Amino acid sequence: MDKVQISLSVFFEDPFYIGICERRINDQLSVCKITFGAEPKDYDIQEYILKGWQALTFSPGIYDVRNKECSNPKRRQRAVKRQLKKLEIGTKSQQALKLQHTQDKSERNAKYRQRKEERNEKQFALRQVKRKEKHKGR
Image (cartoon, rainbow, N blue to C red; front, side, top):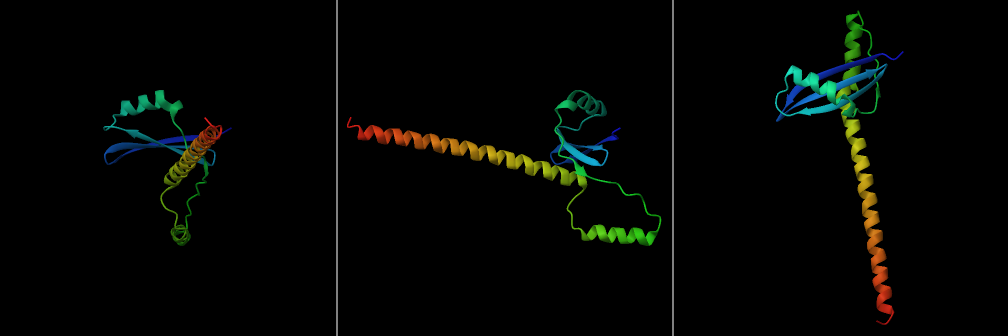
């Protein structure tokens, strides 16, 4: 049986209110960013979640295991030092959003590249037709 946890954090990021919805299925963390306009009320958020849940696009899952708290203070201090050495930027949610952003960007670039190639092929075909027309002696 899958264990599913969902949390929603709403905060103000100038000029809009932003909601970060985190979904944990077993050890996989995926997130979704929701942009609200003005300050949302509690009932607005509840209505949005109930009606717009299917439309949310979550990032790909990131493996995330929450470690149990160590009772030894020295061990906790060493764990903190190890985490600071990793130099990872942001929280797991921010990393998942960044991953989703880069995937969307690569998809967009691939579509653009394909459209550009099609346009170039079409223009080349038109140039070839014009060239043949010139040589027919008309």
